[in-house]
Length: 258
Image 1: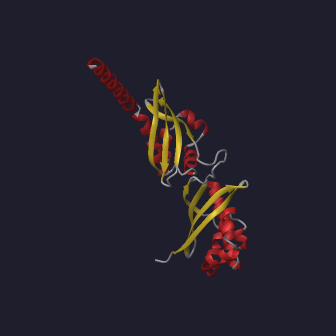
Image 2: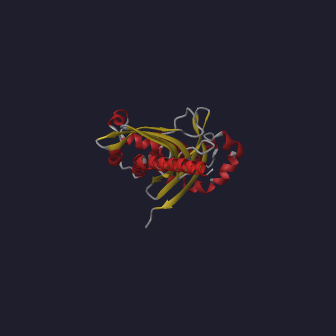
Image 3: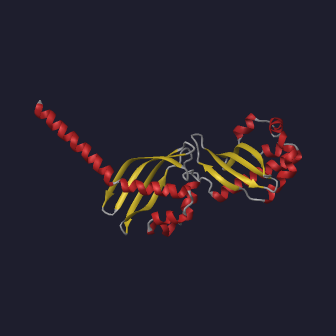
């Protein structure tokens, strides 16, 4: 019995030691991933470039990678968990999950190669929740979505009739809100139509993109810097009938005086 217990304890100790060594020797891989997410959040193109392999940059520039990660909300990562790590020669792999500031959890896989003594990101695979086969809108399409929604909104408040705006909504929102309901909700903006009209000739500044939640809803937050006010917009979209349909619309104005 004592021999068995000693043998069991010895085996357990070896297993624990092996796991400890694996995580210690592969810690440099996770540091690269953490640095990449941090540089993406600050839009530090130079730092991102330093973390990418030569092979990676043949097909994808640092700017393109930043835009791609940001389109999924991965420019604001608050937590990473790595369940698999492995180093074999000059290559390393790791897999796990990352959590964004919006609370969305993405399964991710990294492949890294060693160049000039440093680990470099060679490939990244991100599984987007809830939207298989659907590309999330990049920065340019995010701008277009905001512009389209805001233009319909401005035309409607100028006419003091939200029907044209309602035509743009998702089926779910339409089923819950009639034109009369929307007229009542946005009535306070009717008197601001003249001030906000300037936005029709401008492009919005995109401040934040939150990737799809469990229901496939994405959120785009931005603003228009108008002459008299800052026009803040927070839009939600859901993919249906082959397009991103407006699923939520929150807006407010902020005086530029002072």
